[in-house]
Image (cartoon, rainbow, N blue to C red; front, side, top):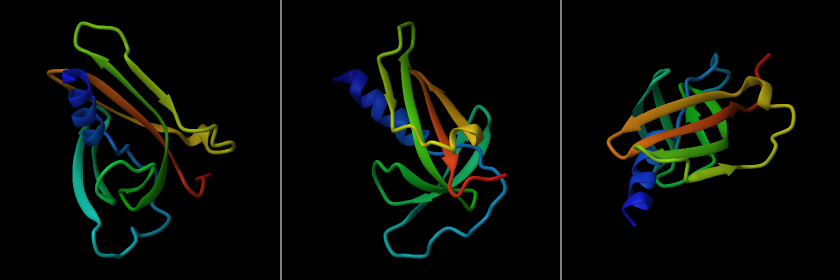
Amino acid sequence: MKRLLALGALTAAVVALPALPAVADAPPGHGLETFTVACAEGAVTVVGTPGDSASRWVDDQHMVLLSITFTPTGGVEIVAKTFGKKTGLASNAVSCTVTGPDGTATVVRVPVPPVG
């Protein structure tokens, strides 16, 4: 149970990734949350609905989730989840890694529409 709580906390912390150049503003609306995530790759600003979501706005760029991994401190990877192939998007993938006392979580996202 402790590992699941740690995974939830770290995953919530890494729901964002360093963004590519912005192509659109984040959507307006009630109930959206804005927060900053301190990734190893750099801090980003995230806008999205509360809770788990495969779609977020990161630094004004719409991003979708490719994968999440979690490795507990001193352990082996216990969670590896891939969210579809996202054909045509994966070449622009960016990641966000956050390390806490319970382990390390990495989230990989891609911009939508693709950049480039």
